[in-house]
Image 1 (cartoon, one colour):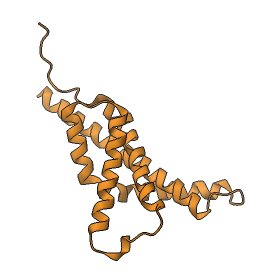
Image 2 (tube, helix red, strand yellow; image 1 turned 120 degrees about the vertical axis):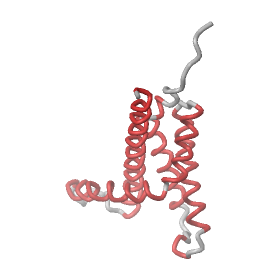
Image 3 (cartoon, rainbow, N blue to C red; image 1 turned 45 degrees about the vertical axis):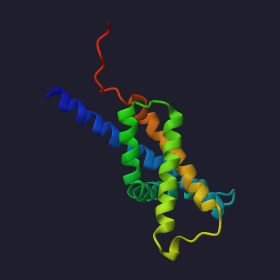
Image 4 (cartoon, rainbow, N blue to C red; image 1 turned 180 degrees about the vertical axis):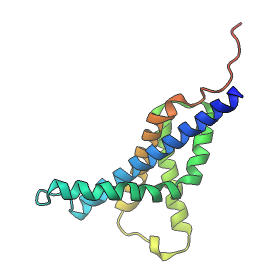
Length: 153
C-alpha cells in the first residue's frame, strides 16, 4: 500500500511540475508578445501592464497546457524511466515539445497558422525551453527516485 501512495505522490508532483511549466511558458510568451506589441513602455503605467498579465498569464497557460499535453507526457515518462535529472535535458525536451507543437500546427492543413514573421516559432520554442527548465526546477530534479536500487555487494 505504501508503494501505491508513493506513486500517487510522484504523479501529483509531476502534475505540479507540469502546471509550473505551463505558467512559466505562458509568462515568457506574454512578455515577448507584449514587448513586441509595444505595450511595455514608459508611457503606460506599470499597474496597467502588470494588471493585464495577472489575467493573461493563467489564461494562456491553459492553452499551453492543452496543446503541449501529449508530447509532454511522453517526455515526462521517458525522463522518469531513464532517471534524467539534469536541467539541460529538460530544457531541450521542452524545446522539442514546442517543436512538435509547431509541426502539428503547421501540418494541420488550416491556413490560420501560416506565419511570415520568424518571431512566432522562435518564441514558441523559447517558451518550451523556459517551461522545461521550470519543470526541472519543480519535478525533474527528483526523477527516477522511486526506482528500486540493488543492494550493495
